[in-house]
Image 1 (cartoon, rainbow, N blue to C red):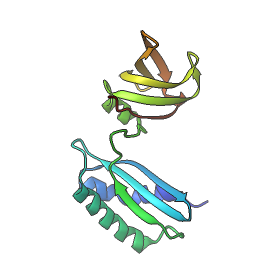
Image 2 (tube, rainbow, N blue to C red; image 1 turned 90 degrees about the horizontal axis):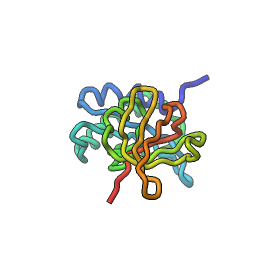
Image 3 (cartoon, rainbow, N blue to C red; image 1 turned 120 degrees about the vertical axis):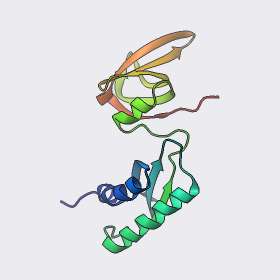
Image 4 (cartoon, helix red, strand yellow; image 1 turned 90 degrees about the vertical axis):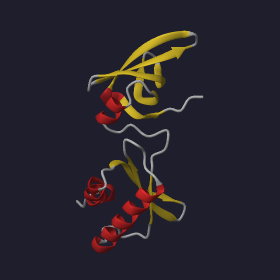
Length: 156
């Protein structure tokens, strides 16, 4: 069985990002309408700017053209994950302690599948969120393996 496009692109992108001291946040290969998009999301401690995105795009595009691992025509997009960055890896949760997060679980926990609040604790196995339900503050422990998706949440 051939490797997934995203895995192949990750192997190609990682050395480029390491050289530029950037972090790979996520890779998507999706079809929207008639077009395919290869989206590479990058970040760093201080965020990323358009020049860094352009450097990664140019270097990765060159590698992709040489190896030609994708049979479809596609558009390559390299960008920051934005303010509501996804939390994909355990390290993302550790770096996000004290920040507001939005999370969905595969199954209900304390009767809920959607959680929004402050990421209070993470021990590698369990995420603890401080959230307000109606007018009461509540701490909810969510097993890491039960998280379907999570992201930072911007609150106003």
